Length: 288
Image 1 (cartoon, rainbow, N blue to C red):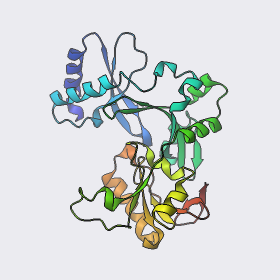
Image 2 (image 1 turned 90 degrees about the vertical axis):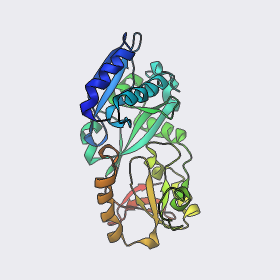
Image 3 (image 1 turned 180 degrees about the vertical axis):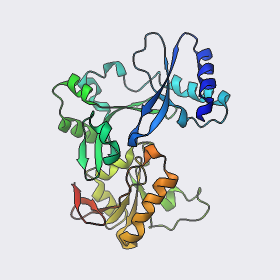
Image 4 (image 1 turned 45 degrees about the vertical axis):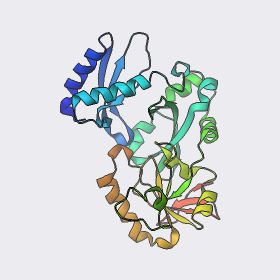
């Protein structure tokens, strides 16, 4: 939905929810990207979701209203009671982790706990799902850490690992055989991070990742950070690095939404030594 239609959309939502307050504000998201958040505050509510104008796929205001209402109504039945957000023992089973670019998010990282991993940073969320495929995330910030008091970043990391999904590594030839206009050759490219719709690039840091790569691909692999949601794996014999790495920046610039870009860097996973490194320099950034 285009920003020039914002006022019409807000007016329509105010008519749909006459006893509520429709709030519009700019929200700074991943990679310092600013999106237009629209929220509806009804009586008795203290935590409401931001639904982003830029994420609405409808082309007309009327259909955008219906799309917004569907998402908003679904958010009223979350999988997590967000009123309990201040209570660690009641919320810890919903803690997950995700990867962001360190340099592009330095300002945001000042206010949240994180673990630096090379040119990436692992941050933590409270995941809230609410039907219709809606998944919301509340970023764990320093204020929450203060409320939880005794919780450390090591505690966050431990529960996030415990809550992590078992993410398969799949051959792209199988995944997209009926959607691409031309066949993809088997054994060339694989994807890690498609089970959960969002933020599964973190799967490259899961303890079982080297074993999964070895089991599925059979050798070491280059790791292409295709977005914050997933990574593409290429068997090491398909190098050299000089031919793969320049493509990442081009794809990120032309085909990935700015707020979903993870990195322009090519990584390399050694399945026997169980470590992740920069593909070009060989510098190790993570040991499993």
